[in-house]
Length: 274
Image (cartoon, rainbow, N blue to C red; front, side, top):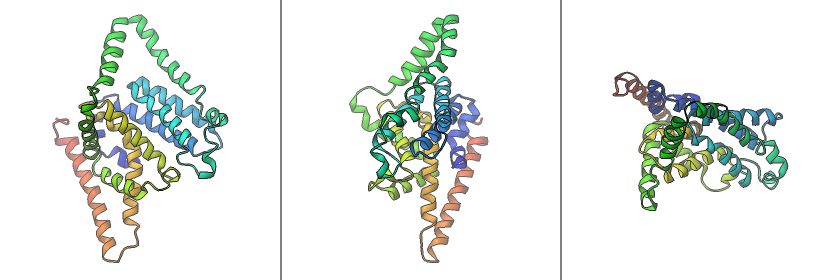
């Protein structure tokens, strides 16, 4: 899944531009992974994982800004809906002990302190730049981009999904297969319900405040990589006749070859590379 995440045209472009997007996405990937471990109660050291999750989320906010709010939103939604846990445990998910285990009482404060360590002294030194350019221009304008009324929501939805499919090709095809395979029945208890929740949550946010760039989709790529590899495995592992399974395997290999070709082009021959 890490290979699928890195081997995407959008990632290659960001590496070339040396933009902070990739640092933000890497830190959000750490936060997402730690949140999955905590929500599925897969560790005997929840405090350590909570520390990793909130610290990475705070640093992600420092790298880029508002996208880091995905982390507390994801944790709260996963907790309230009991996503990714057996039905027998879902009823006790939202108890005070679980909130404490997930660090929801101190985690957001830690995120805010990480911001303050840089923004407060920076504001003292350059109040005009921090207030108007950074917070007002870079953050405020980008959050409001695309929010021009309900009439734009259908167009925003098409744009966001088109960016998903184009920028994360060919792994986006595996993601679609995974979503179909998971279905809606008992989706909350599916092992991959949390990656799916992450993608759906980010998609909903982008439809409301979608910009003109596909860069905003990138935080979903780690979760899409997990789903994409699962979808690919479901296709290859089917009990098919002897003549069909080699054909499906050939398609999978072809997809990887296409991905390599696209990335070589983006790395050396595209407009971004030039």
